[in-house]
Length: 271
Length: 271
Image (cartoon, rainbow over all chains, first blue to last red; front, side, top):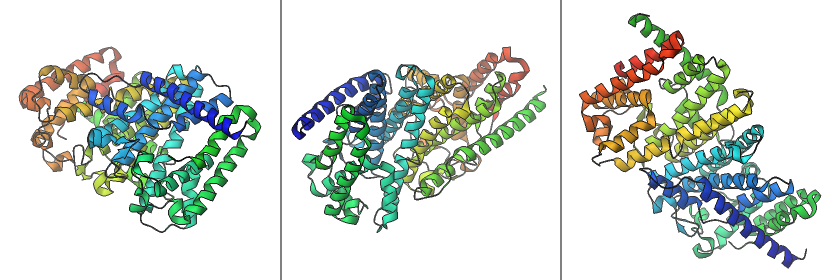
């Protein structure tokens, strides 16, 4: 595929996956009713109609490479996006990153209030695990348990939440490379490349193109690859990681075309 | 069994279950190490060595009635206690109930900080679901998925977190009986009796006997059975619920002796 064709295919793939995930999320999230309607409204506010759905896209494309049924893939993608939305809600709280803007609109605790945002994040995490354990996700309960365990490992104290803790502890500190390597290992390759690209965009971007507050990392003295290495070396590192990630896809041929295009896009994207 | 014998058996049963659950929690929680050690310390601080382990005890005793293997029961009990500890951490946050004291010691965000407390609660929820999905919990993956779904239903937007949202929304409002009935339905019978007893103790008790701040419900204008019905009618309602719960146990004979003793204890306890 030519580079232009690849970009078009990637854009169509991302849009298609995002639409599929949106429909799935709408079906899987509770409906606002009864006394707890405000909670459900906050859950839906935080997870519906926003974001690039990159994690969900990765789940769907990886499933495609292994010929996994699309219903299963869409449910797993929706679960991953719920988990991601919960982490963003809690990260944005005043006690954490204190961010007023997310995906181009007020963050959850700004649109609702702090208590509702904490609870909405909590309930989204619960729902993410429930969806994986439900029979519709896969006919084999062993597979469903494996999915619950994989999401748990990726998101718990040894995964995402642990990484967020490291972020907080490291704020304002000069970091030696070993910890940076460690921070990076949590995301791995493509994830890491994506994160570095995020840091570069944060350093260079504006609120309008990002849809979230720009320049926050530097303002908070947060240790990122950009603050430690400088923008140019960080960019080289992201390109190296993206290239490395792409080589893992070699054996999958055309099936991995979109993921390969994504690896390239990761380091060229502008928002 | 005489009433005295019953009380002794219940005390021994509670102590035995608490010791078993403590050992299990220690084995199932991560060990503080690496850059995220502060997170794991906060998780352990909030969940280890505290509380009556009433929920874990209920899990173990109910499992005993149905001759469930004790390893499975202890893991489920530990998972339920992790879930409970996460809910207490988040409930105590300044944006929620703003409570400085829990189980006779500083609440998690006081002992650590708010960001760490939010993350520790998040990671405890994750771990609670992981434990249920792990093969050691039950040889049949269908059963493990059922456990994940049961914990999800009890704790998510239609369960515990939904109930907490209703609590917040109802603060300072005069509640009509239907909503109170609804609040109550979330806990059901014994759980509800236990809650009413908690509210009575909050209204009557001191910080020292409770191990948490007394009189907070009234100070926050929170709608409880006590504020709506008055202490005496609330106490009668708790006794009625506890008696009703005990009748469910009739067909289990001696196997349910401890649970029956617990139903009686629920409305006579002083802390």
